[in-house]
Length: 317
Length: 307
Image (tube, rainbow over all chains, first blue to last red; front, top):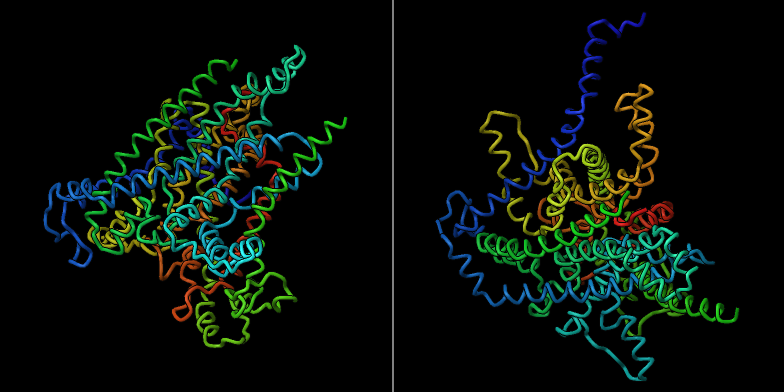
């Protein structure tokens, strides 16, 4: 007899197994670690932010427990701060442009590649590459391309026959475009992937039926495929929008928010205030305002997602 | 039949154009990684290896610290001093990202199963958890730093052992798990929802326990979905910059933070070594993506299609 399986030991194991078999245990057990993690990791800092935002604390002036009370002055200051308001506007404009192009290009490419044809695998492989590169690397890469002795100016010189040495990152307009372009380059693969996935998962029966009944390809696309695909489009918009509004890495590496603050998005604004200007309390107040602002976006996206899911479940057998 | 050929040609033209857009920046990075210091930003731009410039492996030897000198020796010494951290950056990134991604996958999959089968947390739970992902990390990062740096004192006051989260593996790992859980839950929920409950009922009727039902019936059917989810979460964690920048260094140094540091005080940006690191850290992820491409292309519809 094996020495390890004493009667007591096996009894314990049987009880444990029986305990695990209970539905009530099975239902709740996976929730515990997740809730614990979220509460301890996100709820506490959230309360901390609220408290700090009401102080007048700068890192340079000792520990936060000793900082003077400030009340709502930080909030008033933020709401009247032109830099903050412009950063809000800029973030939404950047995200708007980036997401719009990512969706359009991603969808177009997906339409051309979701069916089997010769060379499809090669295209798929290549198209997914940018998404797998670290954004920091993409930032460096684009700064190499756009440096005044870089390949872009080189090509332009050949095309125009002149010596083109434009400093792309010093002009606020082109710097803004560069940040958006880098984001499009990096994240179009994700929308592409979502759309290819969705298109190839569409049930073939309704499409065949429509074709049999004499619908053209365009009609099938408009009246059969597109409606079926709507939930996928919604989730692509939601996922990309929520990531794009957080944009930080690209402008941080390409331009550090400059020239001036032409590419200063909300994340960079908060970053600068907290760690460069050491105005922690002010940054905390501004980030709470950002949260209020974002909660509008969050509610909207969740409402959209819920509606799509509800419709899906209705038709589900 | 001719119309079909024109269409196919057009398709290849459009797709080929996008291939160029995608590959050119990658090509330029790889090309720069083989250039010596004098060729990084020289004008006219150096395009062709062996014709315009002499390709060199110096950048690679530099970043892996295998020695070597070049025209601008001083600059190179500076790079070499930073070079020893490359290995450390790699090790830190691999450890943190692997543990965080796998833990997130396991926790999230278990919860997704409970949500799918028992409605754990209520109808709104998946949406509630998605809001975590919508919080900008910078909003989390500021209080997080204060929180993490206060933890040792808080716990020391309680009389416990010294717990450190700031600038440690565990600090970043916990945060990475929390920030990627929403995606894991959403993706796995879609995969698990597709597994017919009847299969599980059958297994249970034949006397299998809950755990072995999951192991033998559910797991094989969602394994490819789990692979896809793992890769996606791995990419997100592998790329994470802001939280690592705030909550680690100097003891823990992940690759994105390290890359950001890899600059010369003398010469500004060290394009060559940067390009070499960029190439080196990109290759493994691209290969991984290529290997599971088949699953990737099927697994990204987030349960938004009725099959």
